[in-house]
Length: 53
Image 1 (spheres, one colour):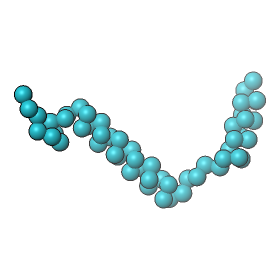
Image 2 (image 1 turned 90 degrees about the vertical axis):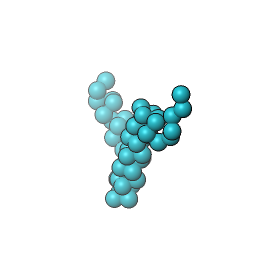
Image 3 (image 1 turned 60 degrees about the vertical axis):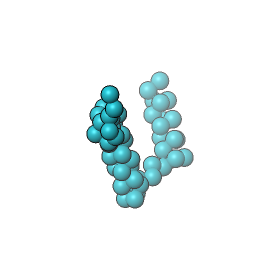
């Protein structure tokens, strides 16, 4: 069963080689930063917009 899984993963990697270029990595890092900032905004809505009573 494990061998079959490994074979599938190998085939998948051959068909879809991971696109790990420098530009791609930078884009991913930017995306992660944006998501983290968004999480902060959700936690502290008053930090970005004035909070009314």
